[in-house]
Structures are given as C-alpha cells and as structure tokens.
Length: 607
Image (cartoon, rainbow, N blue to C red; front, side, top):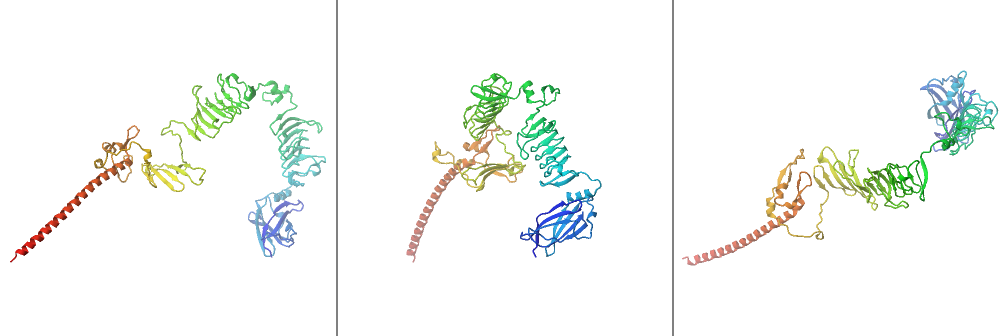
C-alpha cells in the first residue's frame, strides 16, 4: 500500500446549524507526491478539550480522482455525542489520523478557532449578531436574519450592519473589506465605509456619511481625483449632493457653503472665501529681468539680487543688496543673508561665500554650502560641496581635494578624529581601483597601558609592516632604507669625526622617567654628552623644554669612520709585527750559523 505523506488542504467550515457538524476537506498524497485517487481510506478524528479526549469518531470515505475527501465531523461512527461538546469552556483541538492501508498515520493536532464556536453560539438562547456568508465573493458577515434578496452579494471580509427592507441588488457591503451601516447604504468600493441613509461609498477606500451623497469613483484602485470622504446632504436618490468632499489628492470642497455662513472663528473656509478675504502668504512667482523664480511673499526686492530662473528664495536679507538670495538658475537660498549664485546650488546658514556660473553646470562651482560667517565683511563657509564631488570643511575657496580641511589644530582639536566604538583598532584604509583586493590600513589602538598601545601600518598581502608602540618603541617587519643617491646630494665632504670622538662617547644604562613600569634598563647615550662631541647628530625639539634627541642613524657614519681609523692602526701594527718577526728570523738564522762555526772550530782544535 502507498504510504500517506502529506495532507494538502485542511478546511473547517460550518455546514449548517441544523446539521451541527463541521465540514472537513483534504487532498491525500503518497510519499512521492502523487494523489491517492479512488481509494477507500479510514479517517479518525479526536476532539480534545485542552488535553482531555471529549469526542472521537471514524469515517470510511473514498477519495475522488483528485485525491479529495469530504466528510462532516459529527456524523461519523462514534459512541460519543457531538452536541455534548462544551465549546464555550477552554480551548479545543482537533487530531486527525488517516489509514490508507498500512495503519493510522497521525497528521497532527490543530486548535479550533471560529467555526466550532459559531456552533456553540447557535446553541445559546436568543442568539443575535453577525453570521458568516459566502455569496460568491468570499466570506463576509451580515446581521443574522437579514433577507439576502434585499442586498447585493456580500464582499470578502466585508461587514454589513445595514438595513434594507426592499428587494434590491445594490445595497449592503458588496466591496471587499467594506463596511455598511445605517439604512439602504451601499459600500461597493474596496475598503470603503458607508453610513447614514441611502449613502453610497463607491470609491476605493472612501468613507461616506449623511444622506444621499454623490459618490462615484474607481472601486478597486487609488485615483487621486476620486473622493476619499463625503458628507451627503442630498434630498433624494435623483437629487444627490455633498456638504463636504475630500479627494484623495487632499482637495477639500464645500460646494453648498456660503460666505455669509462663516460666523465661527474656527470654521473651515473654502478657497473662494480665502481668495476674496485673506492676505496671501507663502511663495510668490516673480519675474526679474528674463528670469522667473519664487520668493517669499512680502520680501523687499531691493534687498535681493535678480532671482534665478526657476530658483527658490527662502532666505532673509537684512538690508539693501544686489547679490543676496537665489540668483543662480535652479538654485535655492535659505537662512540669513545667504547667496546662492551657482547654477543648481543650495545654500543654508548665514553670510556664506561662494560664486559660480549662474546658468551652466561647472564642475568646480559650488553645489551645496553651509555658511557660518558673522557679517558682510567676514563671510565664511562651514561646509562646501562642489559639483565635482570635492568637499571642503572650513573652506571658503579653493577646495582642491575630495576632502579638504582648513583648521588651526591642536592636541584637543585635530583636523580629523577617528574613534573606534568597540575597543578595537581605529582604522583608516587606502586602496585603488586597479587592484581591488589589495589595501593599506593605518590602525591605532589605545589602552591604559602605553607599552601595549600600537599604531600599525598594515598591508593586505604582508600583514603588519611597522608598529609604533605607546612607549616609543618602533617595530619594523623588514629593512629601514634611507635615500642615498648622489643625485640627491651636494656639498659632499668627508666627516671630521672618527675614532677619537667615538672614544669620547659614554654609553649608559638608564630608566625612562615616563616609564615607571619599565622592567629592564634601556641602553643608549645622553644627548647632552653627545652634543659636545658630535653636535650634528643631536636635535632640539620644538617644544617648551627644547628637548634633545640623538639620531642614532646619523651616528653610523661616525662609527664606520672610527672602525676605518682603528683598522688603519691595526694594519700598521700588523705590518710592524710582521717586520719584527722577519728580523727575529734573520737574527735567529745568523745566530744558528755562528753556533755551527764555533762547533766546527772546537772540533778542529780538539787533541
């Protein structure tokens, strides 16, 4: 037999109040997705009240050609009584098991929602309220006991609380998700609401109230010129009118509102009344020269330059001027005594600097400016963006880089401050478009222990190239190379220092005052001692104390010269030693020859 693997559809609906049962539909498929067609199966239903089995029954339906079964829970083989289930107490759950020939397969347990409780409601005495209906559009709700012949088909998820006492196919909540309240009301627009007497909400998402409103509009789509809200004040179905209409585009009309009816200070007025009685405010269209732009109504034109074409001037000018305001075409000026001269530029703040071509797009002209000047004679910009993308901070002119910063910096107020929020390294990366994977990163970390603080120079291919520690130590992963090409130098001469000066240097071991936790003493020279011997390698810092430092790199040539001089001494001594050794050999040879002569003489004279 095929193994049951999937229950495709699971629908629970109330079939009728007389039957007191629950309709169950399912499509049965085997473990490879094929429907189990034209086969008799066993279905077992168990209804639990919380964890207690309160009802159990079995059915033996036959699937159709599509694998569909339809049964009514409450009409199967059982020894229990379906109507004894107390749906009003606790939550109820349905367990379904199906046997296609190889034993029952548990398809799971699902909580009952609305359907069984509708059955419980029917069991109550004098029940009233809404009933669920499906009149071909989907399930909606209408007051129980209403004659369906007096209404249009209910919409999907619609709620009909209206009253209709005559046969009609137009009244009620026929639009999907619509609501109808009152008498002879019509809510045919999707998401619409009709209230009152003989009103009609025909436009999508519209709301109407009153009586005999005009209505109309697209029922399923948002059209900006259709009504959104109507208050009807008509007298009959052929004499419909609105006291108030609000369109989806925000237009509000009150066609039956007379000017002499405005007696309340808080009354809503019409454009007709405003045009006749109110002083205009806001922007006005004005033409100056050959340009037409917009400026705030009431501004003195003598305080502004010629408006740019299609420019918007929202700025305030405090006195006579021929340049202030939005003078560039398509420009915008806001703030106090600002000037937007360049084409399509925007300026805010006050007393900004800036120029530019008023009619053409020039890459080096301003696009956006924040002015922070203090007067006509002290104009400045806090922020400037050029059309080529260059950004200037505290730059009024000559923004020559993608980020160009002018600032008198200090230790507490640097040009750029990069702060890492996670306690990790703060990083600044560099790369180019020709080699996407590669990059350089400068990364710094700060802690409460200077010796562990680091400023790293990192390469994506080689790792950390150089690290500067907070205690002054420098770690280099590679060679330190200095430029030494003769083409880079002039006034070349031999150094006057050598072995004599090196012998005068006094190497020391010491602790740094700034490093109280230093474990081992440092080795080096004292700058004041070196200064009197080789002054060129001692440098004075530009600080208050004029701190001295020693360039150990520049000491290397002196050491080389000292070694060369020492080698000369060694070579001379070696030459002298060699000469003396040769003399000794010669003297030894002479002595040996003399000794041999004496021995021969003695041998000759012996008796």
